[in-house]
Image (cartoon, rainbow over all chains, first blue to last red; front, top):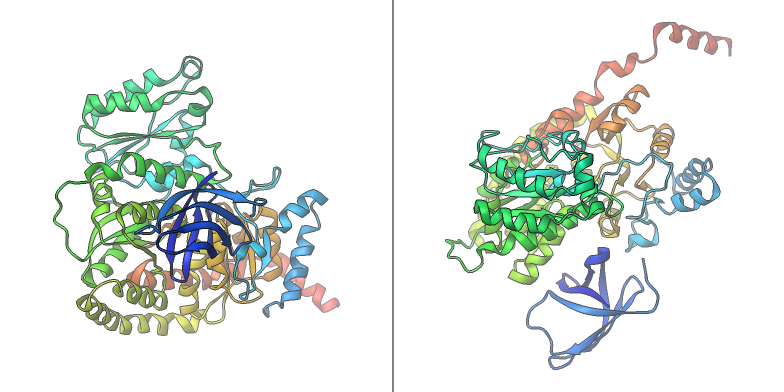
Length: 74
Length: 490
């Protein structure tokens, strides 16, 4: 599990992992509706993370706990 | 010398790497790249923020340098204690030229060195008592200080001193904030982690101290984040923002104060100059206080105009009008500067190797003068910095991350730039090789370089360096004769 931050960028959502100073655009988010938001996040750097689905946050950025899926990317 | 093609640059990298043993070669290869503007993600071409290879000459600093030297040091009304042996603080004292207004030793302490001067007995028995004593003495000798930060040097982490508890007790005793910073030098691979640790310390110990307090805010409040006022940079920036109709509430951290930092959560927009060292706190404020942040670039008129318009877009029409008026007012002045220096500097080639934001930010300023940047590199960047650099640099130019002394020398020998922009450690090597060098860390005792006023000084300095007659006379007369004879014989 890792602390991550999701913020609204100019072109869609941006994923940020403070521990490793990793910034990447989110290419797809599994659930994206007002009631259910989250799930698997696919990043443009090839990585994938999972956040527990939740109600869509009212305001971004938001800090969350995420689980890495697959191998660590650079 | 003509610009190299992509293949030639790749061949150059391979050739330079040849001297290394196989393992080192493999490692260093990842840090050197030929720029390709079509690449969206830098990690596909360059690796960064990795441990330097043992045995090579690196120019990186440590976490303590990042925290005490960069982020905390310039806050002028606080006393920053270099907690540990005397050297770390003394040999880095006042080298960065963060200008400030105030009376040193009375209400400002920027150029002074405070240290707990660890001795063997402090390592053996712990230095907490010494720190408590030091806090007491500081309060007695410098009663007008507004706070203390304890910047840990390596031994503090190694012997496990509890600086947090001493700070809390001391803070209660003197009634001023004391901020322990765990920036021991051995943490991380470069000063970059020190910036992060310092940002986190600000977040935890400073930023929320005035939450909920009344504050007379205006819709035009902004903070300058990540401008260290080197040679007066932040001042040159501030006058422009004020002319745009904005109110600068805080300067982080050049010529800044603790109170300004505590007031920053009340601003409407954070203006981030040095992304590398202060993006952390900007991200935090965006999340906690909903303050948007944007990166701007105040090097060279083209980028200034671009940035000012981008900043103005966050505000109402009155700001936009004032911005346009300001741009129009400065345009003829800048045109005059460019008319004067461009003919002298046109077509000259520059290689850069610095840290923080400059390897990409100053490119625009050089281009305004008709100069070309043919190679650039960061000491301690992360991939997000290179993401931003790729677009700024020309195709097939050279990128080098945490370049070693040997590599940089070889690159300069082959690429033969007209000028190098780097630090003091590189300065005399290249000057002896007959290549002018401007120190781009502290502007070579000149500055400011930010803002419109700074650009005029920047242009003059580049001209001074390039037109210096010394570099034509580097070959002594007796060697010149020999060289000519060889030529004749051949």
